[in-house]
Structures are given as C-alpha cells and as structure tokens.
Length: 126
Figure (tube, helix red, strand yellow):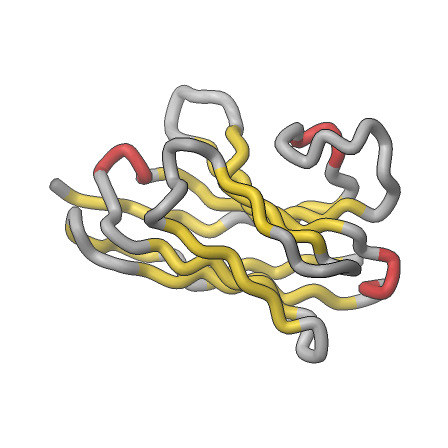
C-alpha cells in the first residue's frame, strides 16, 4: 500500500484546511486509516482514525475532537481530514497511515500502523 498526503499549507488561526490522502496498491487489505501529526521537537501523536473496511466509525484525539472531521471515499481510495477552527498548536507535519494487519487493536498507537505517507506541513499563524 502506498499513501500520498496533500493539502498542507499556511493558514491563520481560526481558519480551515483540508488534507487528503490517496491510497494505492493493495488497498483491499486496509482495515483502518488514520492521521497523525508531529510538531517540532515533539513526538508523533494520534489525530484521528476511521474504520476503512467496516462501518466507518471515527475516532479522534481530545485535542481535535469537535474541530476536525475524518471522512473516506472507498471508491476513490481517499481519506480526508477537514480541519476547522485551527490553532497555532495545530502546527505540525501531518501523516496519513494505514493498518494492514491488526496487532493489538489500539488504533491510537502509531505502532499499529503498517503504511505511512510522506507527511504534509500545516502551519497555523497566530
């Protein structure tokens, strides 16, 4: 599975941005797709995830819940992250990722994910 993230950029605080992730290859093997982010000097953290092969349940970190929305288009093999009410602390490189083989079932852990995109930078100015 190959993942290609896009849509990052510079936005003012309070603004919106939409990230997309295009999946290719053995996409039928994907169970979960998610977004992680890594701010300068910090560890990579979970943003949100969606059950890809099932009912489409979504999960979010507390820091983005109510502001960010994950959606999928299985026919196009794309994953989107709509980010609203952006804050300077949302500044980070955002990565999309996919679970190809369930390990512990903890989809909030980056260790659960087998495939990663290259990352796209989101900068929120104050």
